[in-house]
Amino acid sequence: MARSPGEGSVSPSASLRGTRETLSDPELESLGSDSEINGFTTERKTDKYGFLIKTEENGGREEEVSVEVLRQREAKWLDMLLNWDKWMAKRHKKIKLRCQKGIPPSLRGRAWQYLSGSRVKMDQSPNKFTELDSMAGDPKWVDIIERDLHRQFPFHEMFVARGGHGQQDLFRVLKAYTLYRPDEGYCQAQAPIAAVLLMHMPAEQAFWCLVQICEKYLPGYYSEKLEAIQLDGRILFSLLRKISPMAYKHLSKQKIDPILYMTEWFMCAFSRTLPWSSVLRVWDMFFCEGVKIVFRVALVLLKYSLGSSEKLKSCQGQYETMEKLRAIDPKYMQEGFLIPEIVELPITERDVEREHLIQLKKWKEEYGELQCKSPTRLHGAKAISDADPVGHKPLVHSPSIILPSSVSSGKKTKEQKQEEKEQEKQRAKEMREREKMEKEKKKLEKKKSKGKGDQSNGAMKEENGGEGTRDHRQEPVQPLLAKVTQKDSLNVHKSSESLCSKESEDTYL
Image 1: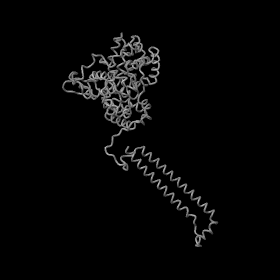
Image 2: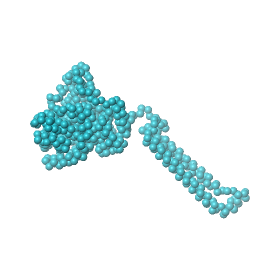
Image 3: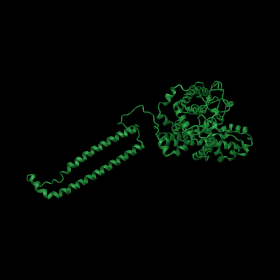
């Protein structure tokens, strides 16, 4: 089990805290980020993800999504992003299913921002990144970040050149985070996370996405004592008993602490472990469903690497077992095999949280209270959206030509049509009520005039100077009706004029 995080104790993952050591075996590290050093001398070719490939390499072809299916998915995602808050509130399960199928590459960066809530975070602090970017930064962290830049995806076209735009943006994002969270500073495992984000979005958006990952998805992972990652190692080991008892017994027998094999997996969200197509699919689900996806990936890899007696024949000791986990059979990491296994694995947020409480209690009994007071972990996009109900801005282009408010442009939306129908019904109801009131007034006037008819008849004759009989019963009604109709017509005109303004405003917005 994990050792005490107290002073004087050094955990197996201590080398991840702001040091020059790499996250993986030094022999597997590239020599540098210059293309000449990495074996790419004259002609550069890249795959569809932007990674440099040698001309003599013939990698296996991945299953491609047809163009028609891809366009259909893009249309569906565009509709969701245009009405994100409604989808998140009422149709979150549909978003989850579409993330499991894979986010279209053209919209992946934007979708990650909406899923993580970083778009809202950025809108709430519009000038924060610019302010942090203009600051000098702590020299201690700046020096360590600069030394780590060339290690992040040296075979990707964004980071292949020393001092290139990719490395510059990576430095800006990581330095800004040390200023944003000076109590946490810089952890080397944050660099590959930030690099993946920069492959899909500009520096400012990548910064806020990194903030959400560190604060909402994986809180405490990058703190000084790495207590959160050690605690999650215990949770993973306990969940393994349910998923693969044989792998659990073998690791227990060999006394291999989870921190020895799962640190890089969890802290880098598998970005340095899986094939790139699998990384992107895992991240799509991770942003939607939270840390349980990371647990599921780890459990699938452990199950298929150590989950049978046949596979354990070559793992007689600690060294052989660790080598097996460092070099997992590629077929278990391929997108076509891994993703269905992740989706079907019966590990839920409730399982993770229940085990978290159990392991936290054991931790306190052994080591006392956690020294790092990290915020509560939120399990995915729905939990983040519920915790911060501020709406997203609609996904629309800023208009270059602004029409006057009296001009309506484009088709009316469903909401506008519904609002017009409701207003029309309300006006019709008011008109019916007015007609009813007018009829009642007429009846009342007739009754009054009948009751006074005989008594006032003589007086009327005298007043008219003896000029025959004249029926005055309808006379007082006419000006009354005229007055009411004139007033009501003014009200109707005013209401209609207001509606037009509202329609124009809604159409423009």
